[in-house]
Length: 122
Image 1: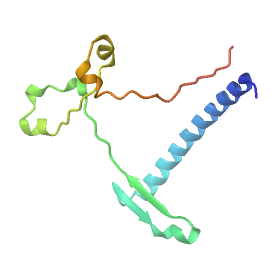
Image 2 (image 1 turned 180 degrees about the vertical axis):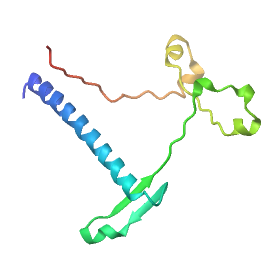
Image 3 (image 1 turned 30 degrees about the vertical axis):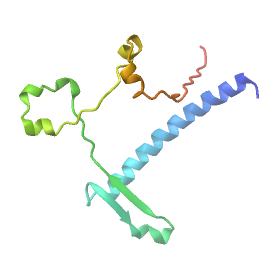
Image 4 (image 1 turned 45 degrees about the vertical axis):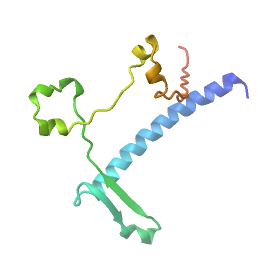
């Protein structure tokens, strides 16, 4: 297969994959919401579908996040500050511009997932 054919196949499959993922997520949300209607947040197994040859388990969760830019530590009590967890995050721009012998042994560098975008020209 020529590279142009491979690129065109990739472009088409990428579009189909996104559409299928979007539809699957919408369907998953509807199913979980329907099954969890009376139960709420949690993990549940539904035995009533075993007669149909299906093992069904759902997990309904809530996610929590905090607005990093809005945090004013001076306004938070010690107890509130204890609710926040801080982790080291590499500032790549500074790291690449500075000699960092103490950090170099701590930083792991590995290949990222490759990116490929193929579009039809108008």
